[in-house]
Image 1 (cartoon, rainbow, N blue to C red):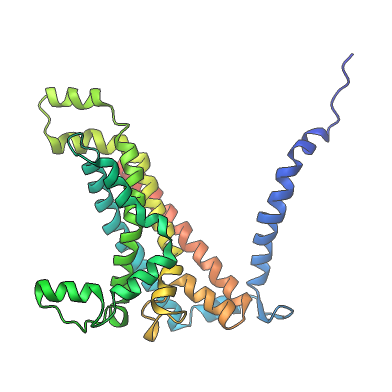
Image 2: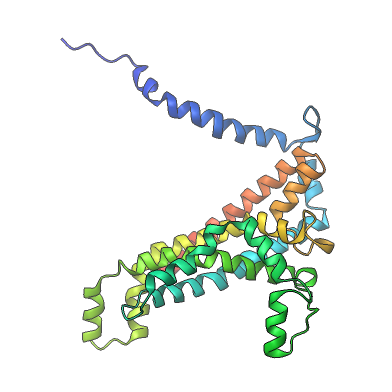
Length: 291
């Protein structure tokens, strides 16, 4: 006769996951909520301030500048990166294109470098007088060699550097999706007289919609968490007047430059809320286009 399982046996099998989840997920979240209600002065000294951290955040002009910069960069990265990545993926998916493997490697390689090295490269490219970009534009269009990319056009500089880095990443995902589009459907549509644009609109886009949706969401979340690239390009203060300050840089300065981890934790929850809004907007738009 079989002995029945002890009621605690299933929890024994679940215990590795429960322990890891409690230590690395549940406790940090609970501690972050508690910490956001504190004003800290180093690792041990702290004072309970309840919601005063959030009140102070929403009265700080630099925070609004950081939110504006982050939002503008997020929208710009979606509008610029995703269409270019889709166009490159369509081009690389053409069977008549020779050397496609080499082109894929070239386009994807910037994503392998990392944001720190990309920031160093573009900090040199955007320099006045000696910068490569101003020199090329000067030779082609008579562009001023003293054009202040990093000083007065911080977000534009970020968009150029960020697009160069992440377009290849999105291109690879979209290319993989395009290669899964049924050739039978494409041939049937061609026989029925559908043109290239019609096949792209009514067959290709619906077929790659899940991957396209992922690329859009990834671009938005990745942009909201932007830190390393502007940190290298503009320094921890985000340049003169916070021209290149992002929300995560503002969080870093609050917690590590000024030592108030409670205030920084409150900023972190605002970043989380912004990410949640991005997810909800994304879901709403996807539902709208699918209906």
